[in-house]
Image (cartoon, rainbow, N blue to C red):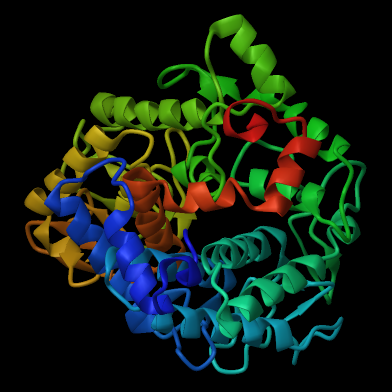
Amino acid sequence: MASASTLGLGIDQASAQMQRLAPVINPVEPEVDELQRRTFDWFIQVTDSRNGLTPDRWPTESFCSVAAVGFALSCWPIGVERGWISRKEARTRTLTTLRFFHDLPQGPEEAGVGGYKGFFYHFLDMTTGHRFGRTELSTVDTTLLIAGMLFAARWFDGSHRDEREIRRLAQEVYERVEWDWVMVRPDRISMGWHPETGFIQADWNVYNEGMLVLLLAIGSPTHPVPASVWDEWCSVYDRSWSDRWGPAHLHFAPLFGHQFSHLFVDFRGIRDAWMRDRSARIGDFDYFENSCRAVQTQRTYAVENSLRWTGYSADVWGLTACDGPGDFRQVVADGTERQFFSYSARGPGDRDDGTLAPTAAMSSMPFAPTEVTACLKAMKAQYPEIYTRYGFLDAFNPTLTRCDGDLRHGRILPGVGWVDGDYLGIDQGPIVIQIENHRSDLIWSHMRGEPNLVRGLKRAGFTGAWLDR
């Protein structure tokens, strides 16, 4: 983005002109544009302008999700580029958020702090920003928060003092994270820590959304982990390689695992050592293609519908982590007893209970734009009750048309089935971001120049395409 000084314009005026001049990489249909705008408006509606905190869910009263804050920070520049908010408003919102997190108290105490060792707790009190309940210090949620900060720092590239402060604060918050502290087992990063019990036993060592955690940890200029962490990460890939429900790929059942790192990293054409070896054996292949195949797998799974769930088809599909009706068994309309779940990660062969999540498909826009657009239209046409002022409600289940017990979320609508009553921040954000990555390359293009991410990719052994240039 050109600076305002080179154009001889004010910051906001310059941004508007740059929006008109920016090339449109992939035009989208009106329904896609409308969905992106409505979902963006959700972040405007729910994010507290006084501290920048975004709730985990809404309208149910909720705590803040730090990952959702990272997504909100990514949405504000999109809103400027699309003409939905001014650069001034986006700048104010972003700076408010970064100042709040920069100044949030940290320490080993069980309460009264927002984080420790530079990491932040998964959930925070919406007013104070302090740890909510006994939630964990989360490495992945901290990563998604910081990724949003680093993108904001790249996009706000002007000479305005607030934009300079945004860049400074984003880097300072990132540099405070002690990634080496969470490498408690050889070449593996723990998923988190509790002040009461210590480190979580689970590590980032199965192919999933954790790629970005490792890349920012390896790329840290202050507390890096060794590149051998990436080698260990890849060492288990052969166990994930599968063609059970579709084309062979690194399998992770819920689609969010194939989306979250891709929100901020353009994996098209860049490969680590494992991907270079795989490409040499099977032809052109990278992590982007892997996500494309994961989407194909989900559509194939929906068409086959071996479990006979209501509504699954080539145009209505999408399993990921999302809300569900509750944890109970229920006899459904065809006379069979089915197991249902509340909030859970779902995927082919993994806790599939007939609950569909619009975000699973909509956040896959760059991987299968034609199929995702068709899914958007079909869901709106067949289930208009799930499409609202703020886009799609989080989830729905056409199989569950009655419930003998208590629902954990949502309600049963006659002629529709179970429909959630909430929107979730970590599901809303990827919709806005991935539609924009498909439309204009906005987040990807800025993050291709983000020095910390580039450093992490190169130390991890990535080469090719834009990274070599």
